[in-house]
Length: 296
Image (tube, rainbow, N blue to C red):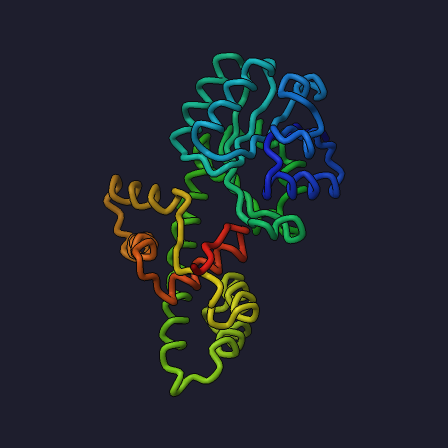
């Protein structure tokens, strides 16, 4: 099985390595020649055997649109483009129609797993025609976690469904992180009673109803910096949380918890941060390698 992979940053480079470890022939392209296997998208297309599959793993928005447009000029009818970045689902519909005019197929893939995906595998949510999903299934199987397919992969629906599912996933993620972070701040505040905040969270990792991978990552962050002294309580958002709220408004679905979590991130950008938002910043760094703002 062969695939072209466009974008070899933190996620893309790890995905290339995991694919190769699982027997997939990967031809990678990146604007950085130091990590790229080929010099251009044209050379990438030439290096692949038809029907070509090209996975796009670049920042959402204008960059993704530019890459899709350029690929549409290099690929041929019957080839397949997979957008694995964090695009908004409405963009998938545009891109599918755009490349479809040239007979090129399109699949959108929501990808979760962050910097840990290389070893743990990536949770995959994909949208598109069944024939295209079946064609790319060896690639999805190579990327997903070991174990039952339906516990790390879903064909969520038609084009747009993969990124829609990932958008909601990230909205939930925002709320979970905020809950852990607020719990951290409350425990840390009562140092007259609680003498071991890190140990308290660590004890929750087995047997409790709040255990999760995010909890494990919070414990890891606390063990590295128990008071988050080196992290400013400033938290960015990458868009999916906002899109989730916009979809909720459009469909009259109440999402008070997710809404509160995104508004808390806005609060974090005020001059005075908070311990809870330091915890959220630390969590984003742990699972996704997102940069943190150092304390001045």
